Image (tube, rainbow, N blue to C red):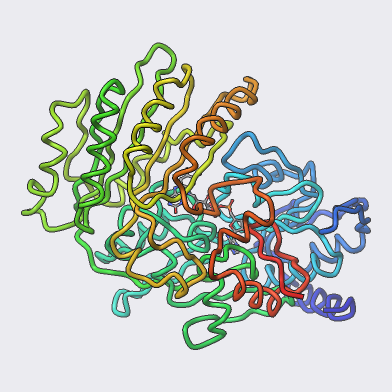
Length: 496
Ligand SMILES: Cc1cc2nc3c(=O)[nH]c(=O)nc-3n(C[C@H](O)[C@H](O)[C@H](O)COP(=O)(O)OP(=O)(O)OC[C@H]3O[C@@H](n4cnc5c(N)ncnc54)[C@H](O)[C@@H]3O)c2cc1C
């Protein structure tokens, strides 16, 4: 869009805002000076006060500049080790504002970040010097119980989707922490307690609305813009800002069996093998994670099984019997529980809320070497807040062909990740070194990784991770984002 079109859009928006009663005081204030911003190429560019004022006047949502109330909350992500400062933050109230922001970013060639729930481990939803589109004012979930569909706005969190759907006895796959964004999780893949039963979050997408790099709002589904629909399902934020997600819902009872069994870390060799065996032969309605956590602050290390069984209640005892045979745990919180409450149960305890370093990769089963190296590496870990997690895959996830969506890692039985966290007043370096050293041993057993959970890989590594889907992704990228405006994501470079 050229400058004239942008001005036209601004005037139209301003004309429609004669009675701006829903605007905050901050929105009505004048932009007082110019700003220096960073372009996609990393150079500096000046944004005049006039340009910024025009942008601000074009929005129903907010434009935040450094120093404005809410700016710091917008720019921060969950991983507190990330501390970046965009030159400007647009908080759209809807798709119209998203279009305005994308036009502006494109016209000024700005580095552009898109934030939904802010859980990006590497902080790709914020940036230094560029524009951040923060979708946190753009949240809603509406359910059509008869059609079994959920319509979710682009900035929504998983908890909103779970809550609204379960009110009608319906669910779809969501992640295990309810303040994770629907945006980043679904566009990356979306593992969770129901994924083995109903597939990944992205497998349950029926359609999306996307503001692409040319500022157009495009509907994408199996029948409309099918190439775009294929690409967004696993291609992350590469193709634009998704303003609406339409999910397929499934009937499910509200009460499931969930909770954790906590054992001493000293039993890790035997428990690691038990996890390998039990999780590999589990029915699709049993989701079983495992976590080894190191000794810390005088507390001994623990080995935790965490589960959700959503199948028929009458079969629960038989399904859980192999876990019960492991003997008496230190703590047992397994009980019948409201599914939505279970989905919120880890919201306060996830170590990724501090400074955090994480490496992850997919595994296809547990070889005896992996089990041995995991246990030995972890026993050698010095006292620190560090863990190895295994997120349970398989089941329905693996029934989808690798090329059916842009997410190729269908054979993986588990997502394995090693992580260390630290209070921010501590030096990060030893924690990062520890994870890297441990990963240099166990990472050899992985085949590809979950793009949304890592950071700092080379462009070649990122692209290789799309495996056989890369060439098609690069073509779709060239069609919808030929200048790579959306690059702060597991980036696919457009074919020339
Ligand atoms: C505590 C925690 C728990 C997690 N649990 C799970 C889990 O159970 N299962 C699982 O699969 N993953 C899980 N993850 C990983 C998570 O899915 C990714 O970190 C994901 O990127 C988070 O999405 P977000 O919207 O919160 O992140 P953000 O940081 O807001 O966004 C991440 C990226 O997604 C893209 N994006 C987000 N929204 C949009 C949009 N509307 N349109 C276009 N692009 C968009 C952007 O490229 C952005 O950089 C977890 C992460 C954390 C920190």
